Length: 132
Length: 255
Image (cartoon, rainbow over all chains, first blue to last red):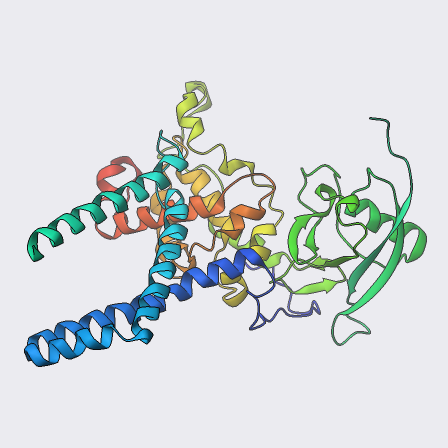
């Protein structure tokens, strides 16, 4: 049974469009959510490169040349920092997404970063081995 | 350090709404003398006692136990008894009712939506079968108690609902406090009520409306951490979907 009283005159709440602007915590949350859009764009750029690679040497060199333009260098620098922030925010909330572990929330967050470090080194080593 | 008894004057701007005369809320400013030990709630009580008796707000215990006096203080959901005027001086203070709820009058919000949701999570221990009193008490180890005791600290002050933008956008969302209390019972070793609560947990208006903003846990005056409770139940909900819950909780009748 609902306790709601239809006869009670109230002033209804309407969520304003700028609900996230005035509170730094909510602003950081929105940046976390929006940063995923830049990650989508980065994935599309990679797919574009893969497509050009499949089209043959000339188009692949065209993609490489495009990547050397100031616009795409800036894009990659910005994306790097945004992805780093995105990862930072998610590793920070990672302890909240699992049952409490005896090692404590800080160790879970650090574990995420440790995994990033190990995988990054592995990828670098393998890539270096392949292109050498 | 000697007790500071000097009196200063702070400006408190209150959001007013009278359902009989106002079409929309308006702001009204008061000059309030205060000493160093005065909470925001005491400032409001000074207004009500000495300046404007029509100012309406809920309060009771004055010591962050009852959960009655939650309001937006400079846009942040806080217990007004737990917040001090000295921390805002010399700037002015803006007081408004908790966001995301219908306003009844001034700082008083309509909590009925939350009370319905609290009822919907079945906030009581559901044992597999009732034990006769002669069998004695249900026994629990400190480690079993540790699983839920934090979530049992909730005082229903609704700061987390005012902090949750998902609740503001979608009022059907069961919301932080009710879901934290749902977890309080599910995580209790004496409770076997997953089967009774699973449909709510799994539903769109259950845990899946949460996008882990995490602000609920930030504003909670009792460190309940509703975000942690809700997101653990996303794991439970996924396990339930794949039929793993019935392996983990064979006695609870989980399907």
